[in-house]
Image (tube, rainbow, N blue to C red; front, side, top):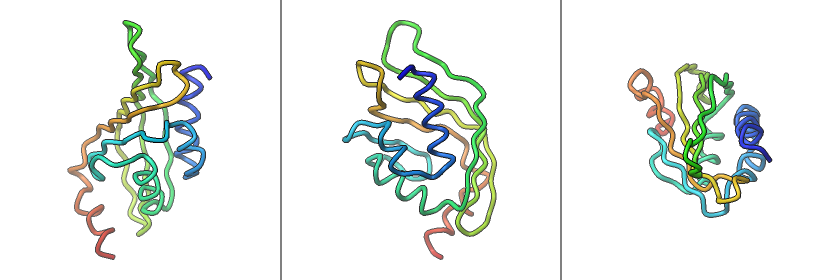
Length: 128
């Protein structure tokens, strides 16, 4: 699968909240580093994310590929996230993926976005 197609498949699976589709894009031992969830195995991260989510929608802005043949790609997108509580937040996000050597799957993901505007709302999810 071409990198652009892999990235679009990722955002589509994220929008659908489809755990099996998302995990199929990662190697079995992949980790995700998230500003809200910390560093977690991908399976645990997405299971918790989808459990905390009522609905989400992404709008791709750009895909950046490593220019020197390195195995990484970044997605720049807008993310509309509705928590299971019904609270809606929107933010700009960058996901940086480390790729497998054959560029067919993701081996690591670092998520970058500003959590300040909604961190307290997110933290309320764990006490409900």
